[in-house]
Image (cartoon, rainbow, N blue to C red; front, side):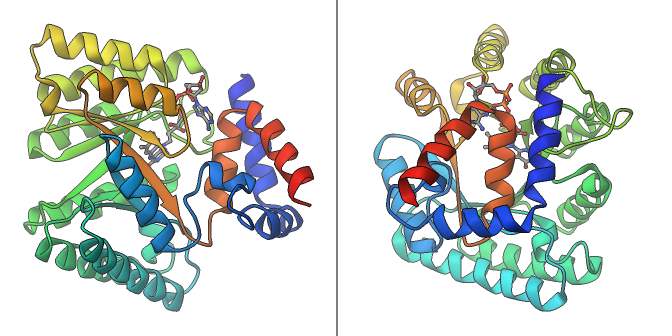
Length: 311
Ligand SMILES: Cc1cc2nc3c(=O)[nH]c(=O)nc-3n(C[C@H](O)[C@H](O)[C@H](O)COP(=O)(O)OP(=O)(O)OC[C@H]3O[C@@H](n4cnc5c(N)ncnc54)[C@H](O)[C@@H]3O)c2cc1C
């Protein structure tokens, strides 16, 4: 209840232009400005530097050029070109070749065919240089179409891509079975969007129980699943289930967000687990940032202190 209220509150705030203006002016201005806790920077060079530091500490990374809900074809084209430049810079920097993107960024909300063309441009370039491209999952209005596009690309032979399932959606268990049969790589998350009752579970207990069911299915039948959570209970259950099923730690990985539970990231890596850090960057960081606040209201105090300091 508290979680969904807080999510609703922050989703409403995220729609405020005044707040966006205020945050955008202050959030990234200095090296220690408050938004930098969760976002590596506004340009790809800063993200690459953060990725190199993550790798130096024994973890892997995926870079996410932030942006969603592109409203015009021109915006989608610009986002696609920026992703292609990012791939090129990652190759030149010599860091791990793994990126995450959102289909609305590539124009899904404007025109599906254009979005598919843009995705194909990125997958083709990625394939040339051995990239893995994770298609993030967005709000439930995009679940069907995102999975449909992913599965179409898979049938066309694009194996350098993976997708995301959200445990707050009851439908995910069926989706997981189908994706496991394809041998596609799935990232499991709880789900970050505000969804209505009837579409998504509303209580933490239900979301967590579904997460555990999905985790077990992916560990038993999946292909290199990514268990993406900061929740120690989910992580412990995953380790235990994998060990009971004698699944070697090299056959799955944990994923966490940049700046969140760095202590847990480090301790899992020290214990020999694969840990991939999701590193977001870009000028369009506000919506991502507000979702992180909504997950943990205690973060608000930290932001307010940052705002007062940076004024
Ligand atoms: C690598 C990665 C990729 C993701 N991709 C997607 C995606 O494609 N689509 C999607 O809908 N969602 C995505 N998410 C977000 C996810 O759905 C959750 O909203 C988010 O991970 C919080 O849930 P949790 O599993 O950490 O558990 P929770 O029960 O929310 O949190 C467990 C504990 O983690 C810590 N924690 C969690 N969030 C925060 C925070 N913001 N700040 C500080 N501490 C925190 C706290 O200690 C908390 O008690 C992704 C998450 C990760 C880690």
